[in-house]
Image (tube, rainbow, N blue to C red; front, side, top):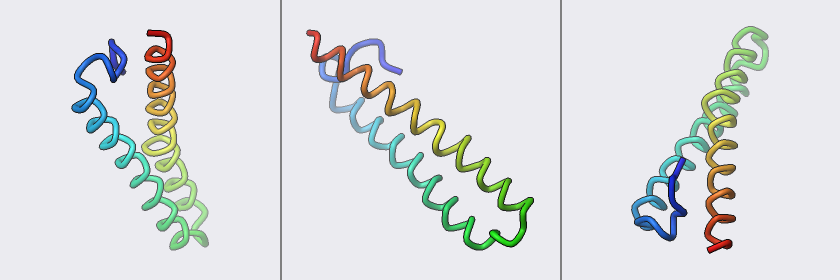
Length: 78
């Protein structure tokens, strides 16, 4: 995600970008969970929404958090 630790390389801008990414991933998950309630009786739609939550929300969120943790470890080592 970042070539330099956030705190070393223009931290403010990168932190804003990170916050935007996190918000986007959480929005997908939140909206998806709301949609699941409405389609719980339709197995195909339920599966489709669940797949969307995993691929567009949870998967990218995990990757963003992993990058954030990696960055935090790099900052600690400096």
